[in-house]
Length: 182
Image (cartoon, rainbow, N blue to C red; front, top):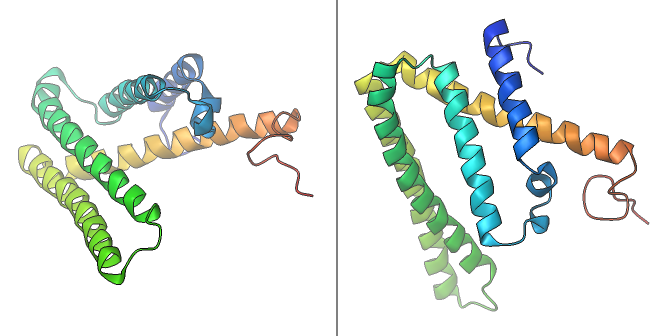
């Protein structure tokens, strides 16, 4: 799992994953239907954000000076991305909940979805440009790689936890990968 990470980064990653394991209910991540209220979901998002900030700080080797230049850019993007992702979710939901739409209403909903997806891509592109201008292209690429690595490590950790549950026989009755088909 962590063969591509250096020893010092491996120690930090281990710490981050351990902290996540201790503070985050993995069952809730793997099975969103178990997360009760919106406040539970919001708290889970906050925990993940804090872990990502720590991971990104370590992976990018952010000094205090670099951090003072980077985090305002990142926080600006985060707010814009959250809004754009929410709009995208709303458009997907509206499209999927259409009863028997007319061709015109379907086309309009499809256009709204495409517009929301485009907005998200444009925000990401513009952010990467700003980061590369503020720092350099290598820094921007490193940030993209760190984000991808963080997401992969979290997915793997969740997968391991899910596999452990399946091996113990938990989940055979409910939803999830261990469910027995009849």
